[in-house]
Amino acid sequence: MITLVTKSYNLHILILALTITSSVSGELANERQLQFGAKIFQQRCVLCHGDHGMGEGLLPIIVAKYPSTNLFKKKIY
Ligand code: HEC
Image (cartoon, rainbow, N blue to C red):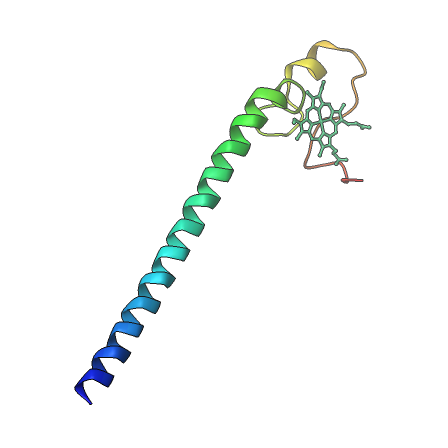
């Protein structure tokens, strides 16, 4: 009986540990991906779409009649 209780107790600890581990690593992966995406956006997109993606990039400002690069106003496809 004591063995059974101990086993079930251990199982709960294991499940709890797995749950905590997977949710924490999930959040970390998400945060990492967000930071990675932000870095790529800074490197490759800001020139036209601007820091906030609202079309305030340098190229649309200096090139006349440049198409709108506001990612919030246009419909995607
Ligand atoms: C050289 C300038 C330039 C760069 C750099 C650039 N874009 Fe664009 N992007 C544009 C222009 C101009 C349009 C609008 C095209 C049109 O109206 O046909 C556009 C359109 C888009 C759209 C479609 C918007 C919609 O609502 O239809 C998305 C999404 C987008 N860009 C994402 C990105 C991402 C992500 C990057 C970086 C990886 C990037 N762009 C880099 C100029 C640029």
